[in-house]
Structure formats: C-alpha cells, structure tokens
Image 1 (spheres, rainbow, N blue to C red):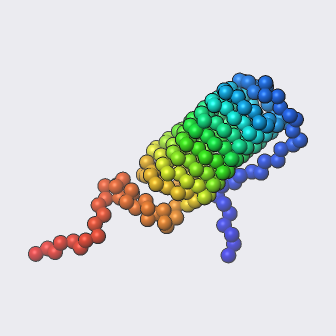
Image 2: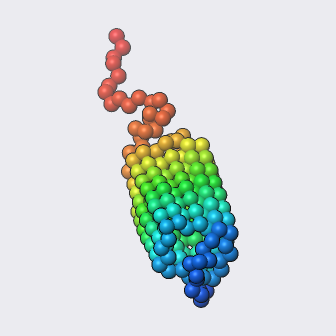
Image 3: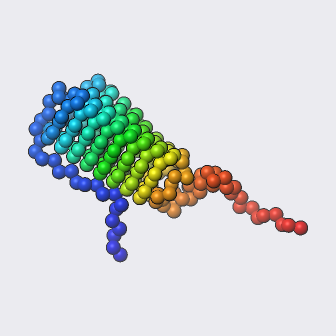
Length: 225
C-alpha cells in the first residue's frame, strides 16, 4: 500500500554561511539578513516592524519580546526562552522554532506559511484571526490554543498536547487533530474540515451531543400502553 503523503508541506530551511550578528542590531525596524545570533540574553527585546531574513537565533532569552509587525523569512529559532511574546500582525514564511519555552504568545492576525514548531512548550498561544497554511506542531505542549476567527489550512499536530482549543468562528480545511491530546474544545460546530481519530471521536461524542442539544440515554425507551 502506498504511503499517504502528509497534508502539511513544510519546506526545508537551508541557511547559507552566516555571519555573527551583533545583539546591538536587534532593534525596531531592523533589517537583518544572513546573521547568526547565539546566547542573547536581554530584559526586553524589541524587533517590532523588523525584517529578519535567513537568520538563526539560538538560546535567545528575553523577559519581554516585541515582534509585532515583524517579517520573518527562512529562519531557525532554537531554545528560546520568552515568558512574554507579542508578535501580532507578523508575516512568517519558512520558519522553524525548536525547543522554545514560551509563556504568553500574542500572535493574533499573523500570516504563517510553512511554519514548524518542534519540542516547544507554550502556555497560551493566541492566533485569533490568523491566516495559517502548512503549519505543524511536533511534540509540543500548548496548554491553551486560541484559533477563534482564524483561517487555517493544512495544519497538523504530531504527538502534541492541546488541553484547551478554541475554534469559534474559525475556517478550517485539512486541519488534522489526530496527533493531538485534547480535553476541551470551544466552537465544535466549526470542526468541519477537520480530521480526528476514532479514539478522539469517542471522547468528543459527549461534547458534540451537548453542542447540538442532544441527550444521551442508553436505557430502553418506555413501552407505549
């Protein structure tokens, strides 16, 4: 039997030879291209409205990080520690984030294409109103994922935990939840275009029944005299 191709297409990131970046260049509106940053530790990182192209950032630590409106292309971000990340209305293409520890991630109304999170732990990921295409979460823990009003196509979870998921008013297509451990979903009526496993369907059955006002009763109906 032919092996099924994954619905999500993640492009391989091949970085050229990189020059060592100067942490002093990590500024609002910066234009960073072909640079490697390693072990940068700051109290506040402000890269709002910046352009980050073909760069690697390893061991980045910041109590507060501002990437609002930032354009990120062909980048690898490894072992980041970001208790507070604000990155709304950004545009990310061909980005790999691995081993990150993120508290609150405000990434609403972002545009993502070919973005891969690997071995990441995120407390709250706000993607309200975002546009996602070809996005994968592999071996990630996301305590709360907010996709309300988002448009998400070709998104997959592989070996990941997502206890709380909100898809109210979302538009989903080729949205694959089979590899996600789920406990609570808000917006069940928006799950058309979603693939789940049979085990997940059993877990979702009571929630779906409640969503549509259905009663579950395994007793025999009373006889009619």
